[in-house]
Image (tube, rainbow, N blue to C red):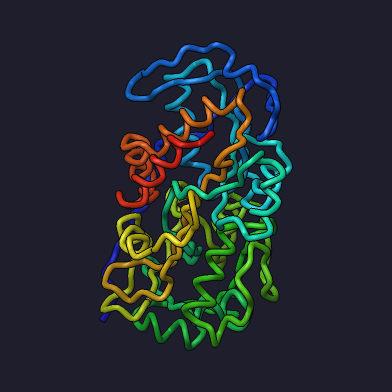
Length: 373
């Protein structure tokens, strides 16, 4: 039976935000006791402004479009604070945070034990913690003119990205798409060249859902053979859009913003599942908090077969010090993160193809932010 579905793609409402001026930031754990410079705390349009000056953050490119909207909305209300978020990739963002260069980092993979240990040198009398703030599906976008509806399962995806399946008319793809007119076009599989939390979550899905086909350990660094690489989610999306026969993985908003069709996942449920925020939310709702203390690391269920649950998801964490944040940047950091975790901040995510955190998770995030010191 022909798969009946429509890729729900729409243009993003938010553009990139340019932030000017010099960037000056003292690392977490500073001994400076000047406070927030005397800026008055105020609330504007439901955003509670506090602190002033420049906040520098970096990391996950998957959350760039969410950050653009959050920063735009926050700075419209809080003119005394300038926020510059650089989408350098999860690995680079975590390293900059651990080097004391940023107020917080964005990462699509929770801190590893060694990174937590290292963070104790930066977070005086504390450590780095993971705050789940952004969720969403990892879309597998493709460029195959004439093929509007494409379904793939984890095993087939694993073989495509491991260069085992090399043309679009391969029997394995035909079996999943019997009514599609599949060409003999060569497959060009694009992956991330930089250390990436999106890669980590994508390979966690493949390793968990298709362990016989994907033998590589999940990691931020791409390990499979062959394929072509590009920097950042935007780089992968650009290459998929420009090259016929291409396929690549990136956060859903990059598919929507570039009008790239996305694969539906054959999970073993009754029907293949589309990459939508609603379907991703169904999968994220099955996650469990496994972090210790104030850390809110989640464990995702990549093997779910629940109807309408899209299991190839990622959660982006904002990494901060639980205690030992720089006193001159702490008020603005808390103020900005409070907005991002607020009802308004989370609502903004759903409007640009991200999945807001489930209530029981985001309520704990808000409480933890309140207690940052």
